[in-house]
Length: 152
Image (cartoon, rainbow, N blue to C red; front, top):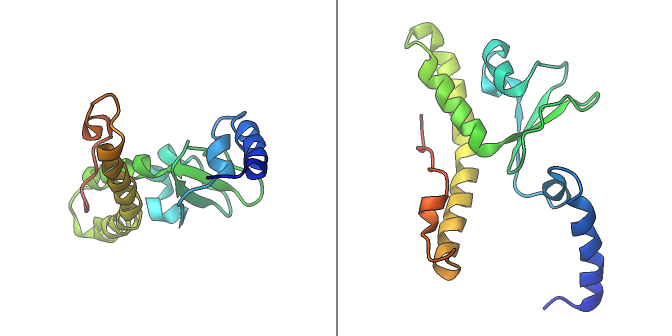
């Protein structure tokens, strides 16, 4: 049980951080993974998802809203893990199967493999809680987005 003084300290944090879009997820960050812009392929393809490349662009995959607006000199962009997995899967499927595209295909697959354990852990945690806390008698598997395949 949380003591009253601790509750009084946590309450303003929750109230103030919820004022802006994505504020709560930034105030109480969860698991994230730092990636480079090149992990999502060449700029001509990745710019649709990440926006134009900056001089020192860093990509942070996390659970929350996409924020691809360049954020000053460090240029950090936040992307959602599930949307990143879907983007990478679509990019690999769109690549023609030629020997010239094989290095790019391997790089996109490696990025997918780095992101997949984060999504799998989140999915498994949600499925475990389904038995303890049913949502209106509905199976959580029906409400969760489909778990992407483990490899592309």
